[in-house]
Each structure stands twice: as structure tokens, then as C-alpha cells.
Image 1 (tube, rainbow, N blue to C red):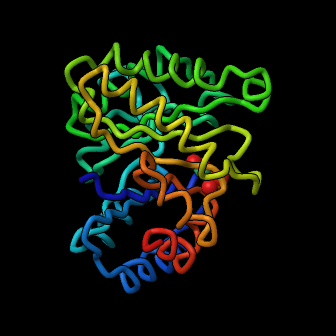
Image 2 (cartoon, rainbow, N blue to C red):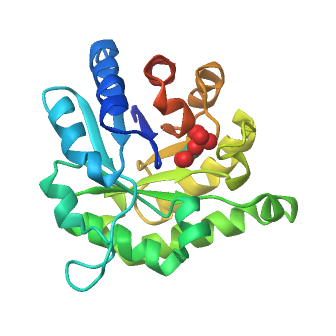
Length: 244
Ligand code: PEP
């Protein structure tokens, strides 16, 4: 049986003092639960801080992006090997904010997933449609195209992925997909993963998940956890989601 994985995406928030308070509240408040895994994806400069705070715990950590390149003249980029040195388990790839503001294409996202896997990291590959795409009735086509690019690139390693369905219109907007809307997309993604021999990949939902809507979302058959933005910045709210 698949367990549940809840990952916090801090985005570009935090600072040494605020992170110390948040990390120690997570460590103090987290009581391991069978079948529940928890992780935080922090800004690059705070990976060492997260690692030091979490190393002796069952809370994993990771990054919010990774370069598709191994090393070299790529100013401002961070390689998967560097992330591995900092103890990261996860690297988010293809978050909609990367796609929207930094031009990450399906091809680049797929290459980032390959680079993460090559360094022993688990890519959390994000897919999701915009509101215009949902209104045009092309949600499944969009997410399946995005996932296909990653599946084609990672080949036999598909089972090592985590995939997050994050409707763009639900991210940071306070508007969330209903459990049934999310489940319908997850079922389509699950079928696509099954065709690639990776039916048991953890399929997370993300988009304005809060303590009060998490239980209903996590109860859906094909929702294996959550990718949590805003609500991951408050320890009590985030832990309530993990326990939901
Ligand atoms: C996210 O950034 O992945 C996200 C889902 O954000 P929020 O929970 O704030 O909508």
C-alpha cells in the first residue's frame, strides 16, 4: 500500500532566525506516524541549516529546483551533485513558478529530473494546467504532455519519481481543486504512470492545501500526499496537514 508524503515548499521565504524557529517547531512537534513521510524544500542557502536541524530526525529535506547540467559555466545554477552533498533527498522540478517566470520548458524540466536522479535525488516533478487551459477543457492533455516529457527522459527510472499535480490556478490563490476534481486528474496521471511501469509513484496534490481541507484531499484514492506552499511556513498548520 502506498503511504502519504507531505512536502513543504518554502519558496523564497525565510531567513536564518525564522528558519531556526520553524525547523525546531517541526522537530519538536513531529511524531513519526506509520505510512506518513514529511519533507521540507528550502531555499539553496539554507540547505546546510535544514540539514543540521533535521539530520537526526525522520524529516527529510530538499531543494526547490536543480540545474540540468552537471557542472561548468552556468552562473547562478546549482547542480544535483551539490544538493546531494547537502543531504537533500528531494529536488522539485517544473514548479509552475519556474515554468512561468523562468522559462522552464517541458524539455528542461525533464532534463532536470534526469540530473536529479543521476545524483541519487528524488525529483518531485510538477505538472498542472492554467485556468485558461482548464476552462478550455484541456487539463488532461496538458498534464499528460508535461508528464510524458519527464517519463520519456527518465525511461526505466520512472518508478523513482514523485509527481505533484498542482493546478496553476490553485497555487497561492486560496482556491483549491475539490477532492473530486483533483482525484480525476490524479487517476489519469496514475493510468499514464502505470503504462510506463510506474503505477506506484507517489502522486502529490498541491494548490492551497490547508489543515482544514487536507483530510478530504488525502482521502482520495490516487492522492498520495501534498506539496504545500504557504501553509508549510507555519509549523502547527503544516504538521496538521501531515497528520490529516
Ligand atoms: C506550491 O508552491 O507548490 C503550492 C502548492 O503553494 P500553495 O500551497 O501556497 O498554494
